[in-house]
Amino acid sequence: MNTRIAVLARAQRALAEFFRLEAAGGIILILAAGLAMLAANSPWAHLYELARDTPLGRGEWAKSAHWWINDGLMAVFFLLVSLEIKREVVSGQLSDRAQLALPVVCAVAGVAAPALFYTLLNHGDAEAMRGWAIPTATDIAFALGVLALLGSRVPLGMKLLLSTIAVADDLIAILIIAFFYSQGLQWGALAGAAVVVLAMAVLNRRKVTALAPYLLLGAVLWGLVLASGVHATLAGVVTGLMIPHYDRKNAIDDAIEYSPLETLEHALHPWVAYAILPLFAFANAGLSLAGLQLDDMLTPLPAGIVLGLVLGKPLGIVSAALLMRAAGLAKFPEGMDLRAMLGLGMLCGIGFTMSLFIGALAFSAHPLHYAEGVLGVLGASVLAAGLGFGWLAAVLPRSSRG
Image (cartoon, rainbow, N blue to C red; front, top):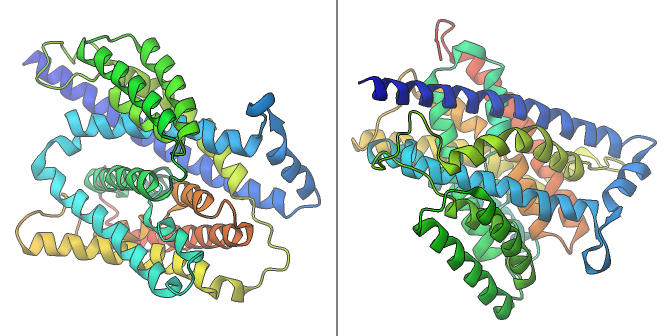
C-alpha cells in the first residue's frame, strides 16, 4: 500500500511539474515570437537577418545559425517529444485503452479536417499543396500557456485531454514528416543508420540503463540520417524510443527510482521549454510586415492555414468527441461539457512550433510561399488563442479546481 501511495504521489508531482514547465514555456514562446516580429520590423532588421544567416561550424558543417537551430537543436526537441510519447504509451495516459480512444480519435480528426480545409483552397496549386500538413499540428506549450492564464478555473481533465491530444498529434506529425518531407534518399547512409538503431536496440534488450551510450549513438544517428535525405530531427525520435523505461510490470520499484527515460526527460524539459523552443520561435517567427496588407491574409495559402487551424481543428476534434460519446465509446473528462470541449478544440488550433517547422520543410526552396506560410501560422495561432481564451473565460465555472 505504501509503495502504491508513493507511486501515485510521484505521478502527481510529475504531472504538476509537466504542466508548470509547459505553461511557463508557452508564455516564453509567445514572448520570443513577439520579439522576433519586433526585430524583423525594426530599424535593426538587417541585424536580425545577419544573426540568422551567420555561419557556424567549419568545412562542410559551416551552416547558418538558422540551419543549426532547425536541424540541430530541434532534434533535441523531437527527442523530448519521443520520450514523452513513449512514457505515455508505456505507463501514462496512452497505456490505458479506455482513456486512449477519445484523444487518439480526436487527434486524427483534428489532423484530417484542417488538411481538408487547406486542400479545398489550394488544390489547384501544386507548389502550395506541399504545405498541406502545416495546419495539422497543435502546439502544446503555447496552448497550455493560454490555459494557464485561466488559473484554477481549468479542470484537470481538460489539461490532461489537451496534453494527450497534443502528444498523439505530435506522433502523427512525426509520421507525416517521415513519409512526406523526406527526399533524395541515400541508401548507404540509411543502412548505416539502421546499424546504429540495431546497436541501440541491443543495448535496450540487454537492459543497459546508462544514458551515455544511447546519446553517443544518437549523435552518430543524427549525422547518418542527415546524410540519408530523411530529415535529421527524426534521429531524435528514434533515439527517444530506444531509451529504456520501466513500466508497471518491471521488478524495479518505480516509487524510489526514475527510469533512464524519465531521468533524461526531466533533464531535457527545462532546456527545451526555456531555451530551444524560444530560440526556434525567435529564428522562425520574424516575418517582415513591410508592404503586407490585410488582403494578403486572404490569398489561398495563408487563408487555408487560418481556416484549417481556426475552424478545421475545433470542428474535427469536437465532432469526433461527440460521435465517440454518442456511440458509447468514450465520455467527456470530468468537469468538461460540450462548451468546454469546444474551447479546447479552439486552443488546439494554435499550431505555431510544429506548423512553422513543417512550413520550413515544405517551402525551403520557395521563400515567398514560406513567408505566406509564416503569415498564416502566426495569424491563425493568435486568432485561435484569442478565441479559445475568450470562449473558455466565458463558459468555465469560476468555482472549478484543477
